[in-house]
Length: 311
Image 1 (cartoon, rainbow, N blue to C red):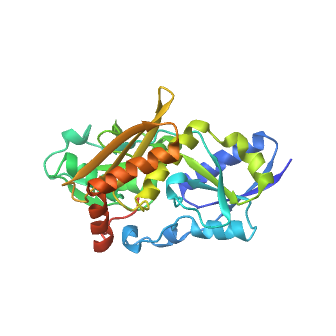
Image 2: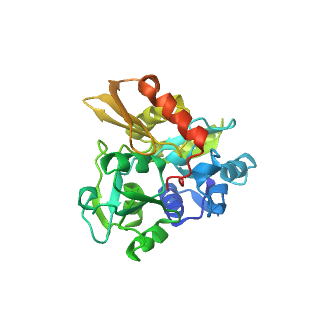
Image 3: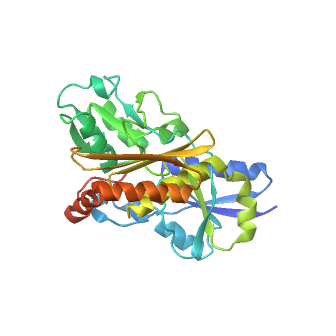
């Protein structure tokens, strides 16, 4: 059996994810070690990450450890991984996906539609902000940084009337007490790859790839490949107002994609079906660009719209 070293960020959620993969590998008889690595995104805690504009801010240092041979694999939230990996790396496995949707959390209100006029909502994502504003232009949106516990504590202390988080992280950590509404993808299109874990290795490391093959989920691989193809076509990272949600329907992939103006004044939507994940993602991406998505993204990049990155 193999001895495998896993690289991971040190947040509570990242450690849950790394320990989850460790347990599955140990069940196969492998010896597993965990190395915690602090990334650029972890170090920048007082600046809106969308303003920093660095792709791979939660992955760069972990990839350096991989390249140097200090770790054999890295466990990431897939949506943190750039759509084009740096040379020398590959995604060996994409795990079975947790619910990819966003959730509405509140101590006092049961859903977005029940919030009072001018309510304070915390979100760390330009994508969520734009779609919230489209649903409820009256809401006051405030940045929300920190780990899951910090965000929930700020909500409980009354800093916000509600906050929006990814369902997957709360479900994995068992912190669902304040989840009042799972927001339908039709109302809030998730981030590309949300809810899935990506296992990254050195390119060409066939021995490790074979050991990890059992973790690869075909449905998650197809849906997230499709979503990431759309994101790549739009040239976006995870700090821009782009949503992508793919799922299998009647043995075909169905993809919904959005590009939204940060103030919610315009939300472009496209959907389609196909069998080839990459072709479908690129096709929907092209349609969004031609319908005005390019102008919206140029506005976002040109103005350095400052809203923190998605959790």
